[in-house]
Length: 262
Ligand code: URA
Image (cartoon, rainbow, N blue to C red; front, side, top):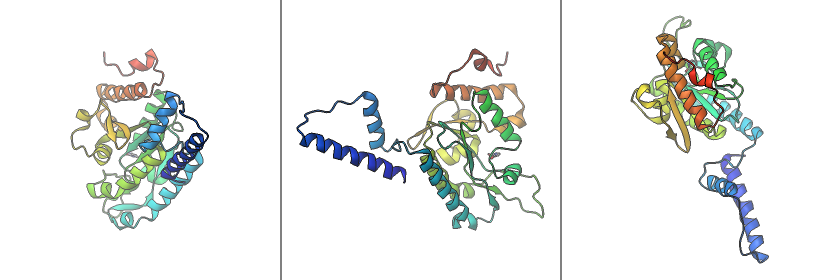
């Protein structure tokens, strides 16, 4: 069942119930403020009417299959053949979105398992979470091709054409997972999801909207691997503290001080 079906179903059930109440002579209905806010979310299309875990898994599997068979994707000669879709918890509050799989991701068919992925996993652990608590995906689902007899471990950023072909898949994925917060990792994710062509540095540190969803932008872990600077690590960490604060997650004194440059 799609989100839309769930919302429509919830609203039509409620409609029937309210009519039955009115028919039985009721003059008013008392609702808690929480119930009112949930109804407003459903009516505004913000909530998926509590789509069940199983529904999300089925919808994501269907989307995965659609992406794998996509003519549009397959016609892009600049992408390789093995799809790397996503990993993690479809009920996650946080959805991390990177740019495209690299060599290691292609081999394991899982996003963020190479060197940048290991750093991302450390960040997630430092937040007090595990990879199974969050949802991890990429805008582009195939590793960008580099011409030559053997690409080896060489990776490249996806180009605009490759990102454009991917946008409706990642948007559909966001709709299904329905996270409370999206964390866009690096410039490709930022420009693809938010249409921003500014630098990551000038776009980080505040909330952005992706449709009805809230998002923050931060450095791609591979930038931190290249930079090696503690000041840059601290900036990424401050973005994670902002995410944790936004999600009302507990933050210890120790966590507040990670990578503080003294
Ligand atoms: N970089 C990305 O953006 N995604 C991955 O999955 C791996 C590296």
